[in-house]
Amino acid sequence: RWTCRRAEPMSQAKAGDSTMKKDSHRLELLIDAAIFCGNQFLFRSLDCTNSATCAIPAVVTFARVFFVACNALLIFIFRKQLGVARGMPKSDVVTADIKTMEARLKKAVVKPVVLLALHLG
Image 1 (spheres, rainbow, N blue to C red):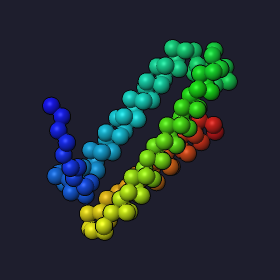
Image 2: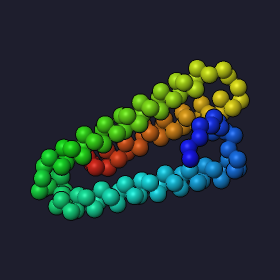
Image 3: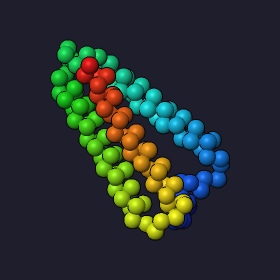
């Protein structure tokens, strides 16, 4: 049964902050690895291991559009969340959450740039 409850601020995690951050990074790495493996499987099954010689050129175009759209949406959502957090009454908890959200936003901006540079370089 689903219930609505108020979410706790990120900075009030029950576990130690360092443990929480390590688990968060580990989970993100696992998700990234799963996405990578899924993409590899999909592209290899479509005989699309090289964008220049892909058997179905539309797959490459779709993959690029999907990549840009997903990352743009993610950055947009992070910016909206950050705007909401900045509009809240200031407290130590809110300030800590804003700092965490700013770090996530930076990561969300840098990550696709690095991936794009690796794929196009």
